[in-house]
Image (cartoon, rainbow, N blue to C red):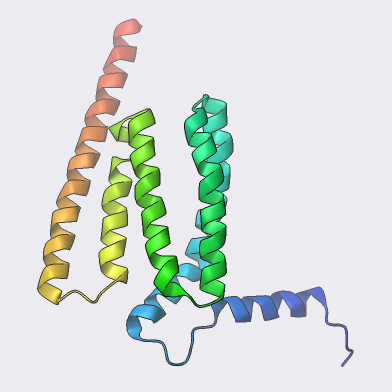
Length: 168
């Protein structure tokens, strides 16, 4: 075998290193690693896309905030690679909550309220050191908030459609 590896071998080696789970990982840490293999890079690309989306919409505070989000998700990717999950998980949850809050402030409840519920739910599931009673109770409460947010969003969409119908 040659000393120079092929691009396919290098890509496979990178994938193996990225997707590897430490042997001594607890079930909670294994869940985070499983989630983060595809979830974190996808989230990074989504926030990169948001920069251009919010700029196209003319919502400059959110476009600028997403520049910081991309930097933060880059840091989270690096922390995951360095296996510093104790810092990566809270930073990710903080970013989701801050981003959803900013979106609600600048675009309204229908554009981000449901993400607050999703972020809380993910936090509860990933950080499973709560007793089962607390986890189930919080999950049900957050699910109800999520359903309420979806109902509010649906009402806003129906109101918008009615306004369009009234115009024509």
